[in-house]
Image (cartoon, rainbow, N blue to C red; front, side, top):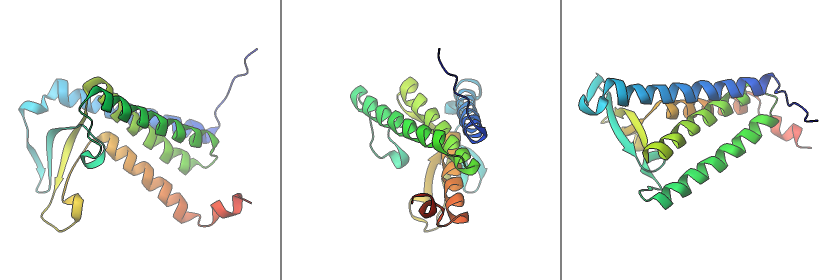
Length: 173
């Protein structure tokens, strides 16, 4: 007889965060591409430093590891799913809610971008942040809802690490 695996409260929080991030990202992309028709309306200026555009990213952040061929895309998606699997394993082992929340947001965002790469051959980005300030690569940055979820997830992990310094050292005896 198969034993049922019941997630604890932290795991449920992480899985819920992943589901919300993934659903929000995919719903936003569907709406922008198929309902709003951003490709025919761009650019839309929201603020002096923020526009709404359509930009296809064939790589990862800042178009690194650009993958135009099917083989390169398969390699990139395979790497994404290996990373997602590792994050899910970490999520399943954590008891800390903030860690679970952060991991869930990262997983949901990563899945959203991986789905884009599988279905569309590239990741759809919409928000164009631009400034003339000397802030390095952030002077021109295009991102999407999945990227926001990933960034918030990383921030949650950093916050947990800052809030509980030395906690990892105490538990690894």
